[in-house]
Length: 136
Ligand SMILES: [Zn+2]
Ligand SMILES: [Zn+2]
Image (cartoon, rainbow, N blue to C red; front, side, top):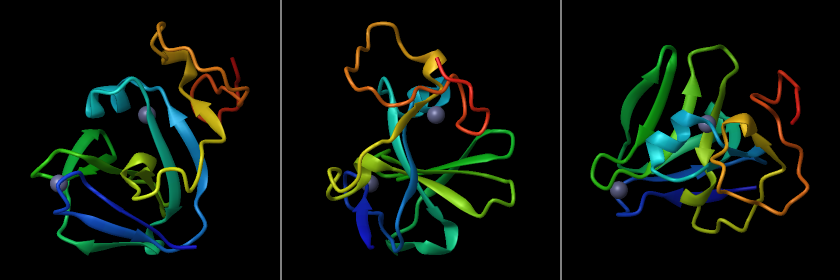
């Protein structure tokens, strides 16, 4: 599988060359602040599977051990990764050229969801992270 995407102005482009996993809609405060949107949809790939095909993003160390990469020209949020050794990187689903190519399978940080956002799906809603496992 090969997924292409990029920022709004086109200065930064990427290719994710494998089957994505952990596709989620994240409701955490940091995603909200970083994007200005009520929630951010993400997919994960291994970092070795993600390649910048045009330009390069700017880094924001948004919290300890965490980097968010975005386009310095137009501000589009592109990726999130932790400093841990997981080797994974999260990519904003709606930066894909075809955001209908994949769909979220769950909600994360649902405990932080804005109260006026009502989504009628029946996907699992994790209080915080998937690995913590608690649903709400
Ligand atoms: Zn841009
Ligand atoms: Zn988040």
